Figure 1: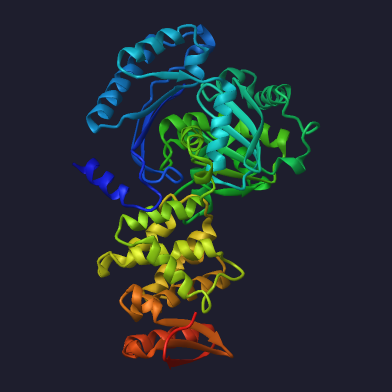
Figure 2: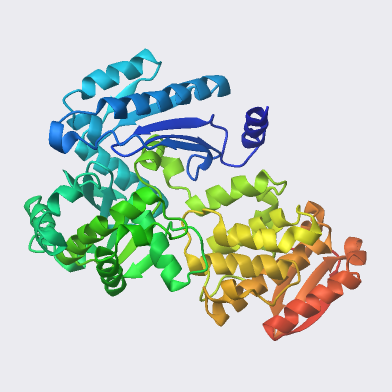
Length: 509
């Protein structure tokens, strides 16, 4: 029943209309099922379940998938197949990566998957690298630099710029294989890893630092590293996606973790025991990457291979959509706020409170959609919940400053301009003030005529010779009531302007 309701909501949402899609990702560490809904340009995760089978744990020694690992993986995969059948999800893509492609008995394992109704595709290392890169491009349309996807069995490296990829490589340096390079201590390990990276063609001599831009880190162990760094920094956001540190900060982080003990890391909040065991070795690998590539900064991406599979299937015009607006539009629509109304209100408030030095019109529109959606929440819980949407939901194509501006606009729309400390920590006072003006202008727009389309057609808000002017058609002069007067004063005061209301025969745009 819940899945049917989700489909009904989805089918009425802007930018959606595609069935749920499921991806089964058979990796060297984990076997994972993810079901996606909403718009595939910025998909919503409806179900995410994994089995830590460690299929690739013995490959370096025996060259085979261990029997008990296969049994554990197959148990989980049978459950996944049954869940998908019961949920009526027919669009299922199953991919297997390093462990299955490298194992001598990988084909035998794949045959067992066919027996339970799955059709696995064993992808090459190069294809794995390209898919991860496409996931990063989907999340960061302006991505320029190098994608490093760290899995259990391999490390994929590929260069990205202008929406294209170049020089995909797959190295046998996954987290399950890193310990074999540690025999001479971590100092010697770094030299061995550096040599492997250089031998694969990733050398500063071939690609000067100026070309390397950003190093995008993809994979669960990298994300655990981001969680550690966020906690150490007191970062107010919870999602590691998009967390950014400069080269010096990344070097310090890697150096700290490289000499850490796994047992000490296991007590850290939001870092699993499995990730804690792998973090020190992964940190040595990061040291080698930073020394060899010298990127300007490091960005952690939660989008990778699975999202790359979705992105690859999108038509060209859908790929060009803004991922932030695509995601927010569906989210808001499902909560009773039509994106078309938000677009009209954003246009209506444009002259008085545009995006200026700190924001952008795409961000202002996203703030408008979220703020209107927040009005559907009960008043006593509205503001904290809406701020949580802005700060902690996994939006794509936005940074911490942008999230803070979303939160500030939402707060002002609710007549709250005293912002929480976590919001103020993410953006300058000037940026937050710009967003507060967006919110106050929206408050005026929605309260003027109770969000009716007609009220926006018979009125206009503009700035004229140092005054904020509300023009109203004579037929709707009565709309200017006490609440409207209060909203005009609030906005005009924030803009440092006088204000007036002009009643005119009709509105001429």
